[in-house]
Length: 160
Image (cartoon, rainbow, N blue to C red; front, side, top):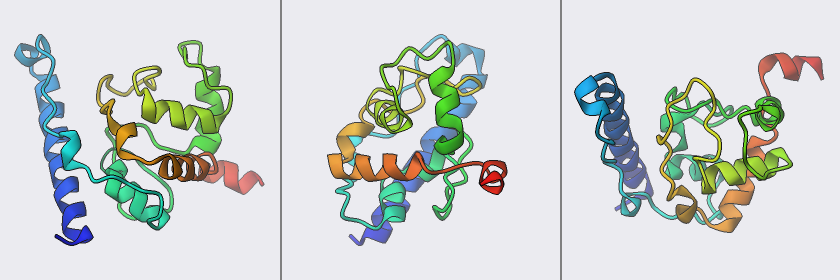
């Protein structure tokens, strides 16, 4: 199966799971039970870090949930925007942040490896699978973190 077909399959499965999670979260009868994730780790291919940057994000499924500047199709709204050059320092200063990261780079790594450490206000908890870090090689995670810590809002880029 080609990488393109695998990417389309992964994106489709992620989208179905997110739609199901969204609608089940609105149903009070379903809220009492924790939703079962439709996305299993074996459905997401390992991202090695040797892929082009955009392919790393796409293979990992990040665009389904997040807005990521410079990544085609990364217009997701389930998770917070990944403008961490601007928003990372704010998140580290948030009184609700209880993680160990001291830098934005560390925060990105921590957010992938332990997504429950800090949930950005306004976004649903337990949405990001806690096994995502196992699907990214150390090289891929480093490249992703290095890219995300550079991303800023339009306003911040205009100030420079």
